[in-house]
Image (cartoon, rainbow, N blue to C red):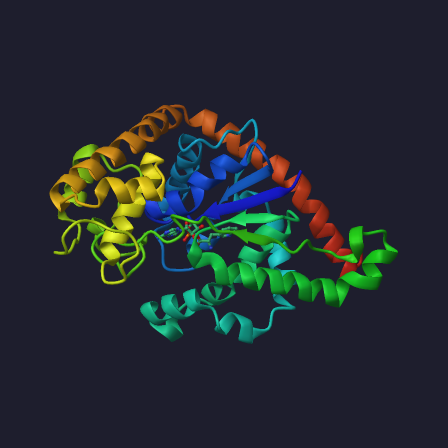
Length: 342
Ligand code: TYM
């Protein structure tokens, strides 16, 4: 079976972008692939964060995975920091990561600028190396992510090839390694729709956990009245009718896409249905569709979080299974890089 891995940072609350761009697609992969989904708590400390909250948001993110339909009889769900190999491999990878590659990362540039450049922790710079470690440890074939992770995936692929070149070829073959390479080179899996869910208050910027206004996003755990209110107040335009793909109407395209994804209709069906609709009617329909889609997730979330032992067991089993795979890769890399075995 081919292997799929992915993760979400436990910072702030999980929103519709994380769901439509990533988690919702994970659910449909777990039948066909061997899947591992982690909560990337080590990535969450790369910007100033609230230490007493970290364990809570980590648990809550795990509960959201399950509530969205991740089935732990099929997928391994675990916390990144519980599998020590992630950090260990990161160090090994970082020795072969050119600084220039990291300096080019758009997310690093944006986040460090916002945080005041020189004061930013170096972990924000090396963040993509940890992400590469998350992926390469499991010899992953596919990584389902939203559009904003494309560049990090590209770096992961280049790093895998570089390490394979530096340490993988002859040495690794001599030790009986598969195909003469240490790492499988993974492919990103970016959904055709939902890969870039935009803000409710500005159709040109992406929906994000860190945007100051909560009005800009729908959180998966938002109660009904909050959803209704956010949709009522979201940005629209004054063109007649509703349509996809008009560059002058980014908000319209975004809201129709969200509607399409939460109703499970096709783009053509939605285009047809909404062609002559006014904003008032559409907003009511969209809010209803969102509530219908999110309500069962929220019910399951309540159920899952009412039994903390259950979640602990899942996470502990998940970490055990993951560590078994991760340790094999890690040991192979140590050997290939010439370390004295213990
Ligand atoms: P994070 O926590 O920022 O986002 C989690 C996932 O949600 C997607 N996403 C979006 N998709 C569509 N529209 C949006 N507005 C939107 N905002 C976020 C992201 O693309 C992502 O798939 N570095 C990663 C986490 C990570 C990871 C990994 C992912 C760490 N290690 C290994 C895959 C494999 C991140 O910060 O995601």
